[in-house]
Image (cartoon, rainbow, N blue to C red; front, side):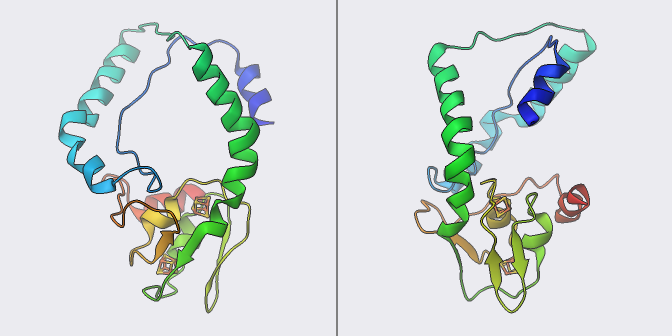
Length: 164
Ligand code: SF4
Ligand code: SF4
């Protein structure tokens, strides 16, 4: 459904990317990612994009065949099967205080907090719960890092409000 919606939107003049902290704890040591933030100059990247938009610059990057294949694989296999199963790898440890924040910030309404934290197996794999837990109680079996990262410019309340 979402794909059809995007196709219906039709014309695109400008596509770009912002290099940020990669929060995939299964692939990256998050502290290393955080340490590279000054070089990444995210604010500078955003300013450049704002200038591009103000000056109505057109930019359509050339997408390589391998990128197209990766994109297809992600949507055909990853998003449908792997992400749904991601929550089977979550471990909520004894640091959990049952505050319910993970449930409120989950964009997929995939978490129920009662006397324990329950994942409902329609996870989108965003890792928002893992990085947003104030007690660092959520872990992945195969994580490379215990460090967590959340953009200091976006509060938990803003995430919760956005979900609502
Ligand atoms: S956000 Fe963390 S501490 Fe709060 S209920 Fe979820 S896992 Fe437990
Ligand atoms: S916050 Fe993201 S990773 Fe966590 S359960 Fe919800 S969809 Fe899955």
